[in-house]
Length: 321
Image (cartoon, rainbow, N blue to C red; front, top):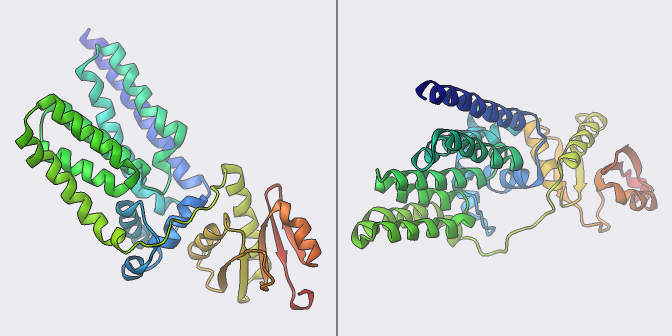
C-alpha cells in the first residue's frame, strides 16, 4: 500500500509539473489579448500617480502592481505581463494537491487532485493570462486549505483580503468562505480577530485609493479570440514593416486599440501615435479595421496593405481624404 501511495505521488507530481509547463508555454507563445492589453495600457504603463488620478476603476489592483514590477524587471512582453499569474499558478497547485488528502483514500484523492489541478488551468488558462482572476482564485483556495488544516488563522484573512484585491469580483466568494469558517468554528470573537479584521484591512489597504478615485464607468471592449489575436499580431507586424521608422498616426477599432498600444510598447515603436477609431472623418495615416470594414476602406479610397480573415490594415494618404 505504501509503495502504491508513493507511485501515485510521483505520478501526480509529474502531471502537476506537466500542467504547469503547459501554462508556461501558453504564457510565452500566445499573442496578447484585448483584456490583457487593456489592463497594461490603462493601469500598468502609466505612472502610479497617473493611475491614481484616473477615473477608470481597476478591478485587478494587486495584479496591476505585480505586473508593473514584472514589466520593470523584464521589459514589456506577453510573458512578462503574465509572469505574476504563473507564480500564482504554483500557489494554486500546492493546496489543490494537499486538500483532498484530508477526506479521500489515496486513489480517489489522486484523481480529484489532478482534476482540480487541470480543470481550470487547462480549460480556462487562468494562470497564463495577465489579469487577476488566477491570482484571486489561488489565494481563495489557499484560504480554504488553511481553514481545513486549522492552522495560521491570521493567514486565512490575509489570503481572503488579497484575493479581493487581486480581483474585486471575488469579494462574494471570499465572504462566503469567511462565513463558512464562522459556521464551522462557532467562535465569534476569534473569527472577528483572526479572519474578518485581516480580510477587511488587507482589502482596504489595496483598494481604498484606486476605488475612491474611480468615478467613470468601466470601459468595455470585445475580447479577441485566440485566432483573432494571432491575426491581429500578424496585421501589426505588417503595419510595422510597411511604416518603417516614419512617424504615423494609427486609428484602430476599439477591440484592437489596446493591443496596438501594447505592441507599440513591446517593440518600442515610439513613432506610432496611438488613437482610437470611431469611423469619424478624422484622418489617420493607417487604419486597423475589422475585416468587415474593408468596404468602408474602399469607400474612403484607402490603400489596403494587409488583409486576413479578421483584420484589414489600410493606408490613408492625405489626398484620399
